[in-house]
Image (cartoon, rainbow, N blue to C red; front, side, top):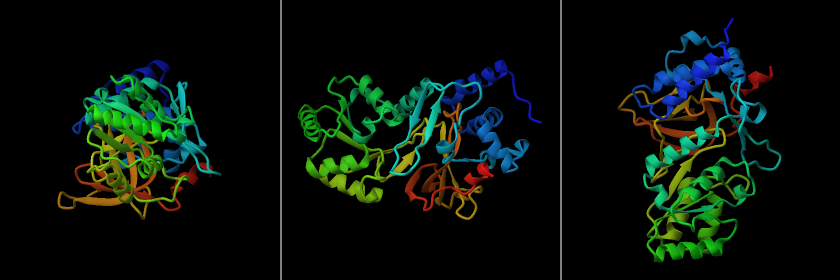
Length: 345
């Protein structure tokens, strides 16, 4: 019988982990991940039940490839939250007609703010000195979008008062970009893919001082196209060499970023593993330094997710390189990940 820790022990364990999450590196990542697993197995009843149904022996979890990854669909059907936690905010994913949205019950919004601010500053150290222009039409119609929350904070922290959101205001957005270009103002245009493509078709222009960053988001709005095709449309329309990308999701508190060629890199507290095509519970990694990449379902460890679940099996298919970077290859067909049904038995 597992012994549940006392309330004081719970807060001590949680705070000890939180104090080290954003200082983690390659040398102590695995140890901290094991600590997080033990904490979440003990304190998250949904995750514990899932592990128990898989007959996981906690004492045998010695490294990260042994850790079970919770299918992301559980965020649609369950409240994935550790005990003794009260949500400060509930982030909700977008959904297509007839689908169910994911809900992320966030018990400590400061963790999310610390995560996305520290993360983007790793890749864009001077982000506050950019004019931030958010092209997030459908997301702005929802107040519970984690992406809108992040971009809103970036806008508020920018030194430029003209930073802001654009809700289907293409002409106003084009005028602001032109003004910024003429004044040599460094600008970040961040938007969902379908809106950026629509904007590119209507207002092609040559950009010299503007970074274009897409955040995904084609489902239910346009016919799905691959990232390479989508990036080609944007680079051609805007006369730029590369499109930047952000990889994040409602169920995570951290993001990965790509500067070029759709190759993403994670912050130190986030790591990508792969699961096998044949066995969704088997981790698949590049087997040696001579094997430059492996392909499979994308599993993500997000140590900032201390209050929900840090080990998530996503619906994405990807190529993982042996340096830890990854490339998205598309969605997994029939992507209700096998194993999710265990909780309904």
